[in-house]
Image (cartoon, rainbow, N blue to C red; front, side):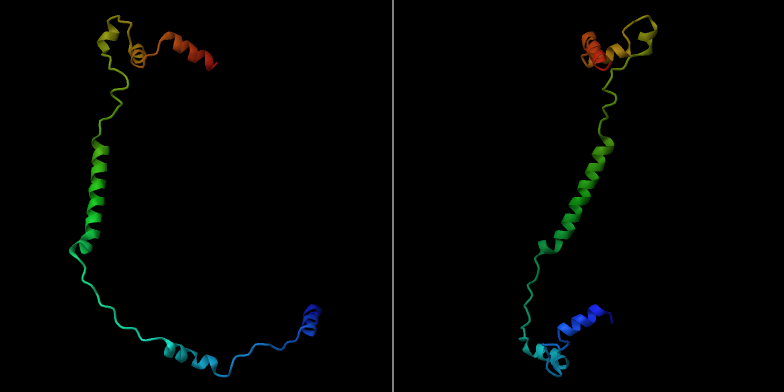
Length: 123
């Protein structure tokens, strides 16, 4: 033992002020069980048909929602064909100067002044 422990034992007595009666823990479980009041059995109420089928109905609704969402995702019209109007190769080869870039600019309603303003801001 080191000096601190000896000093603590000298200052404070080693005697325990609290004591448990002899055999207390030996008979504790029996005493507790004897003091618990006896309970009457609870009568069970039969479940209605809706209470019994509710989990099945919730699962079926979740499956329907998942299938509907997947169908919408797989068969939704894509917007990639509508972003830029299609220009046939014949109109580009016959000397027509109205190309795909011009059609995209017209579709988005961008004029030359707006393009110049965007370019000048980014320099």
